[in-house]
Image 1 (cartoon, rainbow, N blue to C red):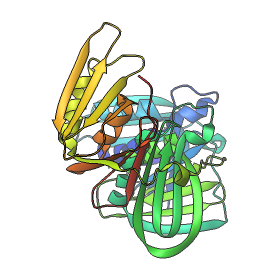
Image 2: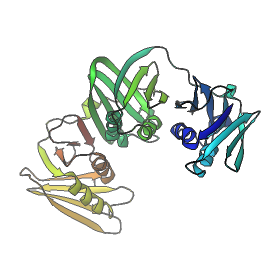
Image 3: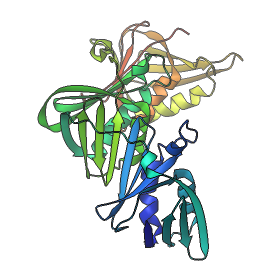
Image 4: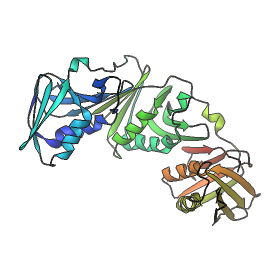
Length: 367
């Protein structure tokens, strides 16, 4: 395979798109490599971790030649280190890839393309839809922070994606908090649920853009495929039963306050400085027209913030993990939020006033 007079970014851009899933340590050395192969007059780059596979194309980069694999990290670091306007000449011969740029020359070790593992695509398409990239990216952003990390309940280490009639819903929970968001989509779909692995969700968050460009979502048997901007991402789904999230969302809470999100976020961030580093507890003391935010730690230090709120109901003293409150405040893009409380032992419900497409539930804690 030979690439002549190739602009650096023509190769670097698709390489960056696929190399994010490449792990530094692998039981299979070839998994540290990226597969480079000519395809329909373009150059296609593919990376996989055996659970997820990403392919991206460099248009018009090559006419023909054999495929090869080379270290994704080394090639990416090398290209980044070259000048932005560098022109490349790449030659693959035997077990070596030679990259020339001006007076620079680099020889990289290659491994046979025939040994590169690929995820075979399922043939049964259960559901398919298309929507703007910014909508899907925004949907994931609203819920992904609530995903569990390395929980033994493996089905919580991911995001539930639900296609139902004219909506696309996303849900994430770690057992202490739950984030639910819904998005209207064109079409009338039969209900389909899949759990996307955490790594897949985070990778999509990096690759999707805030644009109107479309992303197609294909739900297959045990897989989901996303195609957008010359990129194809295929991921296995988590095999498990996600909790019934509708039972977790509280109804009928009467103690409701509406407050400026930025004001509450700033107050929480200041109070969090003196919270207990291990338990991260915060007390919310709600009284007539005031909300007090109180944090203490094992050094007998205390932070107290008092905010004005339009509230006339019964008083309430309730504790939470302050990280769970900061998480939702930092990821919502709205000027005001509404918080509904029950009693000191009930979950709180965070919503956006005037909208029914987002709900965040957080469990209380004893302080």
